[in-house]
Length: 245
Ligand code: SF4
Picture 1 (cartoon, helix red, strand yellow):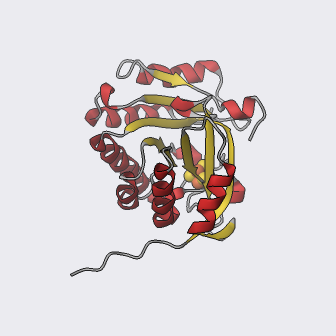
Picture 2 (tube, protein in one colour):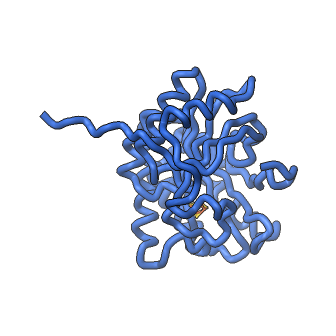
Picture 3 (cartoon, protein in one colour):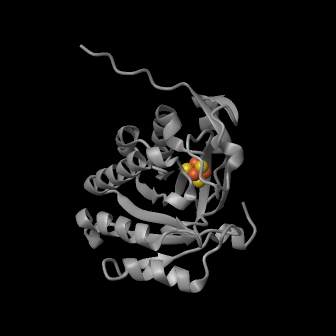
């Protein structure tokens, strides 16, 4: 009989804090953020560069990380956002913390760049709310040689999330340099297998203070989605506008 893989006992955490959800369909809600260290990607507009090195953050036992979560939890917080960095880098530790959070009666929310559909499939059972982020080429997330593979993983993660019945939404960051043609191809691909009722939102997020897209450019992206999904929204990062973490 095959032995079950041992649960992860350590985790590298960049920070844990409670703030206002500033992105996506749940913006404006009080949220605990568990920022996990490490990300193998390299978006040029990344707003958490301090969390990118795989050896950044502080090392905790899973039990100490659970204590930190309990200590930092505010009243009237209904969800914990696992973010990064890229949470899938430490997917086993993520599972342990997600189980703990659910045990406290809270919902778990995963913000991932979806670079690895195999790891995503392993954690999905422990997650209640899923953001699937698609990176356009101008993000420089990976070099051109690896872009096709990243896109396939992102699409596979979306398929997995939808078929699991989890609350799932899509986010795409756009800049003034993003290609509308590329965006349209992505939208076509997404809605070739996604029914509008199967997702909880499609968020177009304008870049902030880096190559910001003007209104007419944003309308171009919006208009590319609307005929296929009329609940599309352009939503900037609220926490940056109001100056909180
Ligand atoms: S995937 Fe996220 S954490 Fe990683 S480089 Fe891009 S924006 Fe930063």
